[in-house]
Structure formats: C-alpha cells, structure tokens
Amino acid sequence: MRKQFKHQNRYVTGIRWLIPAGGLLLCLTLIFHHCRFYQVAELPERRMATKIAIQWNQLALDLERHTMGYRPPVSARMFAYVEMAAYEASLPDLPDHISLEKFITGYQKPPEKFGTGQFSLPASVNAAYARILRHFFATAPKKILNEVDLLEQHFHHKLIAHSPDTVISKSVAFGQKAAETVWEWSKTDKEGHNGHLYNYDHGYESPACVGCWQPSGDLATPALLPYWGRVRPFIPEVTDISIKEPLSYNPQPGSDFYTEAMEVFSVSQPLSKENLWIAEFWSDDHPGLTSSPAARWISIANQALEKSEAPFPVVIETYLKSGIALHDAGITVWRGKYCYNLERPIAYIRKYINTEWETLHTTPSFPSYPSGHAAFGAAVAEVLTDALGTHFELVDRTHEKRQEFAGTPRSYNSFDEMARENAASRVLLGVHYRMDCEEGVRLGKIIGKKAVELQLSRKEAALIF
Image (cartoon, rainbow, N blue to C red; front, side, top):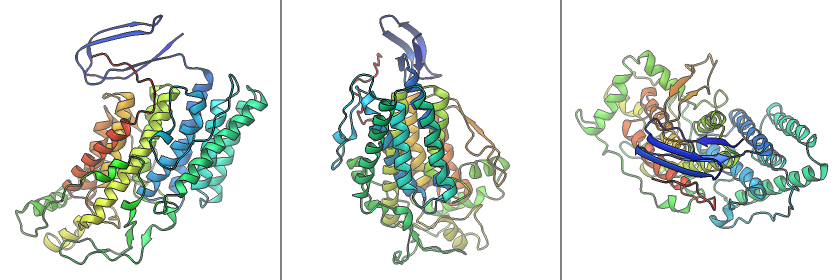
C-alpha cells in the first residue's frame, strides 16, 4: 500500500482529489495557507533510519544537558553540525537531494561508491550520529558518554541481522567518513570551535554607560560569549540582517522604556498560576537540570516528527534545517546583544521602580536585547511549519514528570503558537522586556525562512493553488 503523508491544516477547505495509481494530486481550496501531500511507499530501511535519527537526537539532548559549557548558542552550533553529518551520511540513499557543499565554502563531501543494494541507510546514519556526537561531547561525563556506545551497538546489532556484513561495514565506514568530514570542516570555524570550553570571557569589559549591561547579582559571572557574533554561519547572508535598535533608554515614568520595564514588574505582582506555569515551562536555562533553550526546539522537533510519521527525507531535512536555523539565529542574536549592550530588567527596575524586586529565576549573564529564546523558537517554528503544516496539534512533553519546576505538558495548535508563548515567557520570568522578545521573534522568523529556502531537493513537492 502507498502511504499518504500530508500537512495538517485546519484552515484548508474545499475539494481534493488524490489518484494514487498515477500519482496525480489536485488540491483546490477556497481558504488555505499551506497544503502539501507527500505520497511515499516508505521502505523498512527508511523507517528504521527515521527511528534511528529520532533516538539519536533524544540522546543528544541528554548529552547537551549533562555536559558543561553547552550554553544556548554553543548548543545551537552543535546541532547544526550534528544534523549536517547525518544528512550527508544519508545522501547515497537520497538521489533527489544534494550535498551542502553546493551552499557552503570550504566543505567537500566524501565520495560515494555504492552500487545497487550495497548501501544501508540506517547503518550509515547510525554511524554518523555516533561519530559526530563523540567529537562534540568528548568532555561529557563518562556515564552519559557510554550511552553513545550502547545506542550505536543496539542499532548495529539489529541491522546486521538483516543485511550482509559487507553492506553494513561499508555503510558504517561511509557514515563515519561523512561525520569526520563535517567535524574537520567545523574545526575551521576558529571562533566557534570548542565554544563549550570558553563560555565566559573574563577579559571582556562591558561599555560603561547609562543603561549598559554590566555583570551583576549575587553570582556576577562574566559576559557569556561576547564575540559569538563572529562565528561562521551556514547561511552567509544572515550577517547582513539588520537588527533594530531598542527603545531609547529613559528612566522617566511614562516614557516608552519605563513602560516596558513597568510591564515586567507589574505582571509579577503577583505572577498568576498560569503565568508561572508558562514562565517555568519554557525557561530551559538551568545547566545540568534542563537542556538549553536552543535544544528545547530539538525536543519539540523530535516529538513532532515522531507524531507526524513523516517519510525519512522529510525527517532528515527538517533536522538539518532546524539545526542551521538555531545556529544562525544564535549568531545573529548574540551580535545584537553585544552591539546594543542593553541592561536587563532587574537592573532597571531596582534603580527606578522597586529596589527589592526579584526575578522568578536567575537572570542570564549577557545583555538583554534581543531575546535568544524568542529567536530560537521562531526560527525552528518556521522550519517545522514548512515541513508539517500551519496547523499541527502537539502536546509538548519535554518536561513531563519533572518535580523541580512547573513542567506539566502543555497543548498547542501550531508551532507559531508555541514560539510566541515561548517568547512571552521571558517577560513573565522577569528577564526580558517585551521589545527583546518581539525583535527576537522577528529575527528568528527571517532566519527560519532562509533555512527553509535552502533547496536541498532536486524535486520540490508539487503545490497546486
């Protein structure tokens, strides 16, 4: 039987005819935003490869959570290269897809030399994820790093029971080579390589001016990654994206800036039960306790892709574009943070509104504007919406059963809804102004759309309007 995979969209109405025998699709709509059907007869090997990709990304979240130094932009960068390795390792089985070497300078894919029936897609993908994650998490605690060996062996034993040894061994070697090639290319990005080893710059001096961010609070940690804006992006034109100036700093009551700070203060007096839930549900900024805000969106992608039962080409491309969107959003936001060096709400509120005010959680040790949380969410939401549709119901179970904070699952009707609530949560938490979040969402959407526009497939799915 041919399996139909389709975008879900509550706003699509009208008439659809689907003729499987001829592969003809006609989609006539009266009101619609995004209507796309994928007709696939998914082979068992591709279904297994999808399962492997999702489980490796789940393990990557655990690795990221437990390894010191994987703060938001570092984590985002890691996922971009990890997903790239898996994508490149898949290409012998994806004749309609092209390598990233067509888009990026200095990278050259490994040669493919496979005849019919000589390549095992799941074996290659399994080997690529294992190899690239060992590189990125060489400093992970031994206990969690051992999980890489166990997962790799788990899938390897399953695969050798169904394919000739020579096919598996050659495919494993190719997956490892693809990962090594990506890793070596990642090392040429001198500013970003091994970023987890140098989070805080003790030599950085924040500009001394009224309204400029300064390390403060009980911890008073140095600036986090002040030069991350120089890291190499995947999409070169993101360096040309203009970041809007924040509101003019003004301590006068009634001014636009004062009003934004008063909003942060007022919503906390007191914070409602619902707002507390939203704030803590999306916080994700507690190293060792949760994954980072960037990784949160890989968790969401995992859940969405598993629910969707999308075909493997959609899965692997979605992971890749999500990683790229996260990485380039991190670079862009950090460029803006250390360009404008805007102080956090806690500093402003204590000076001009209430000297005793406290945020719900600890304020991050970097400037306020724009919001990284907001940008990460908006960027990946664009990718997931393109892959799975404008209406996709999802219960986010990332923090299910956690007792340390309000992690009870929440339900959503779209990725855009998730991204906007994620952004708003930063105001509720007390660590961002509204303008930070709005600009973060705007930037994230721009970058997410650029990731979506990467033409990785020679054959685009037909859209008939």
